[in-house]
Length: 366
Image 1: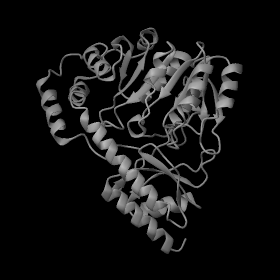
Image 2: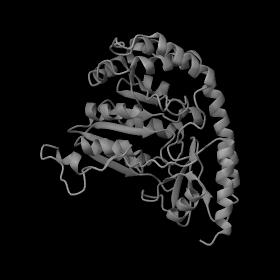
Image 3: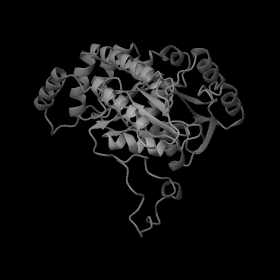
């Protein structure tokens, strides 16, 4: 997924904006290993019978015709499922694209406000689009720095505020009252984004808070709980007025008929999402309980489908797991996350392999 900014020995063309030249690409390098726990993916694929139905629908549709201009058919189904006004639903190929569009909408020449550490795409898009990036450090327990965010909202020029629940990359969930205090402090001048990408795993839901303000938006994805990361679909729930402005930035015909067919089937059969999320939560608690007994590594609490694992030496721990065919994500370069690896919750077999590798680390010469 990632690429070098330019070929070795070659400078970027002069016409490329300096903000783009100086920002690194999205920080990910794929590795071919048996157990992949590095991208917070759903441990389970889209159910086989639903995949077969989606494939049949794909084959039945004409591929030589454009899809709906703004995914109107899917938007109507999604609005019904989420109990939302269809005029306030915006659908794009992945929620990452929505973050880019929201930064274009309210960040260019203005402010992008978030916490530190945070989801890398917020900061990458802010820097590439030339927004004023303001980050307030999380509290030591990873909770929202409410006072610091409220002060920034009061003193910084308005723009877009990102709040993630559960938080990435920590998996922390804040009390609803703390989230509300920050959102209400934003008033009407800021665009407030509540990123709920991992909400299926935490049981949190901020639709009611979003409904209270026309400048608020819930950002969601089909990549995590729905198990459709390969299809690339994300959506926003917001007011019709804000959705109207946001859709101006969405490319026409941006949801193809193949993704549309897969999503139709998923929306007609949503029950599997809760079942899979419950299984992930059970596995998460089992793995965290086992890792708490580890004499060297220490897992941190999480309400998402991933968790942070604090180690004395992140590089050594990362390489040890890799030698056992397990890839995770290093986070030790981020503020407050010294020694930390981020690990997705896998299938029971994958989690057993991780725990076996963890035990092996203790007996090896580190």
